[in-house]
Amino acid sequence: SQKIEQNSEALNIQEGKTATLTCNYTNYSPAYLQWYRQDPGRGPVFLLLIRENEKEKRKERLKVTFDTTLKQSLFHITASQPADSATYLCALEKSSSASKIIFGSGTRLSIRP
Amino acid sequence: DAGVIQSPRHEVTEMGQEVTLRCKPISGHNSLFWYRQTMMRGLELLIYFNNNVPIDDSGMPEDRFSAKMPNASFSTLKIQPSEPRDSAVYFCASSLQGAQGEKLFFGSGTQLSVL
Image 1 (cartoon, rainbow over the protein chains, first blue to last red):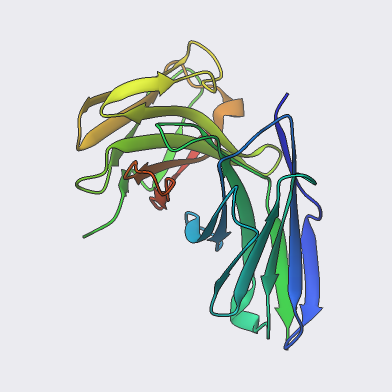
Image 2 (image 1 turned 90 degrees about the vertical axis):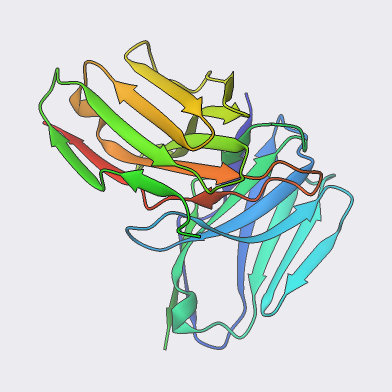
């Protein structure tokens, strides 16, 4: 069955360091991979989308990589700040035509001052 | 735009009662998704609609759950009868389907507690 794994439930790092979160998937061939941020008591908020034919995408301090051979995406936050503390979810979409979007279980990131 | 609007924000009910959750998607969006989130199972896709038509309801846990989208601006998720194991946060999300991938916009969710 299709499975999405985010490698750690929680990640705790020092402010200023780079946070790296991992998303692995099996039995799936996504056309797109997305990353969302979720704060307590709120719905997820879209951050970045990367296509299957793209290796890397950047937005300000965020960087996402997508390796369809390894079936893995890495999500990096550089120069991390306490305000980056949240749960980060990866999501897979099969195609652009009215398709399912399924989520991983998320990684809770804590940035300590 | 007010974003995706869900109601109620919180719902507490007793086992066996009917529960109806409501969602108003962003105007102009043509895809609508219902998700359920728990600590144990994460964010699970229940059902999604495209142009008001249910496309995939394979995530609906059992016949007690039903969803409708009578028009482009309104959807409901109904649980009848409700059970304690249905307690979760239910999210509605909408998107504009296109070639660029579907970025989802989520509502604030409905926290459901079934006693």
